[in-house]
Length: 617
Image (cartoon, rainbow, N blue to C red; front, side, top):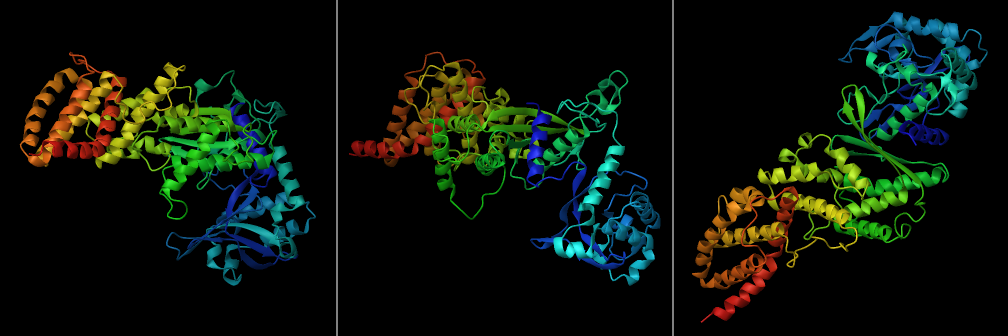
């Protein structure tokens, strides 16, 4: 299914549940409602604002949507607008002086005089009388609070609002008038490419808001703003006709998915990812459960957000997620992961990134919920490394920070977020080679403050890339524990050279205790790329450090243990060390170094103590 068709179907579900406005309406932010008597006199202003924390914010209300955007000139709304049009008044920026705009109020009044002249609805008639009698000078004696200025305003008939809390624009007569006005603007019907129905095509597609780093006013997913994009002399959207209703539907659905606070979006590098389930065939409730289950898996781990102080600990949550994903990977998708989620529920993920005034589609993934969860399980399994680099399953954004200079989001390589997300969603696809390249580049640059944590993340990424690549290259081999922890039997030269480098570094640190710039700071990049040119120098230096350890009774046994480690590693290496290591081999070097460096503490302490005891006089 195409992107626009899937979004339009999602809109139908939202509209059926009352979570999205009907066609021709938008969700406006309304501050006040003017309550009118039947004779059109103003009775009071009802404050509609709601309290959110310490702030008072406008209430979202479905109101008629004007065609196009208000950029210049005077263009009044229908049955609602801001105080400049409704009352002809606004407060200045300092909030001290009331500014009068009689021309705007007159335009608002004249529009409703023309539109409502033949209506016999009591609410519409009362509104017409009110607007006819109102002028900006009436504000002083109206009893309206200053807060009503600079807000959006709707209207209600006192008797109807008291019993039903319904606004004038929501009554049947008002809806019929608005539908008639929309129909009057309709263009010659064409076949909609989204729905297949004959309908009035839209010339300009809706602005999409909520995409990170895109224009705050919104960017276009579909547009024809250059002559090169048009054909046969057709204007804008007529080149690929999409009905106004379908354009409104997909735009409303996507804006709802990407809005602030939505649990149907995550951020991955420069890519804003929206995800949703299709209710067709499973029902709205099943689709909602699938989205909630997906949010539980995606948002806490993959989005860059602070850990909550309330709730389960990182370790408890990691165990829970591990159990859920392992259930799925072993063919038990309903065991722990939302037992009432149908694994056959259709599921969509859309990745968008800014491109000037337009949006680029980084990826479009159409799947079912079962394979989606299995893909997450495979991704998490590929990242396993001992000791763990993260307390729990890592956030996807956390895999991108190690590729960035100084670990800043603004320095994440462009396009990498979308490429990584595609690989996560498709376990039969290699992780992007640019991911491994960027991590190795940061390691060679020495950009790893707080070394244990940062290097662990980079080692885990290298391991994941190698594990995925190896599994796809050798699908017939059992690889559950490929490079998860130290493998002393692994004969790969690059892996063993990484282990050897870690041992040589430990010898230097134990011998000299305080080192301003150790061999890792000076030689790690060169050793991982051109080992034949570096390791002879490092081995000669280690002989001096070992002699220092032998001279001290407390470290004599430790020197013997280090020599045994060097012997074990070097015995499986060819006499001629590799002159150059490729990208994949450099990744193995990093993993071998991390495994040996992390594993050395316990055996070094225990075995060195025993050796030292044997050598005491």
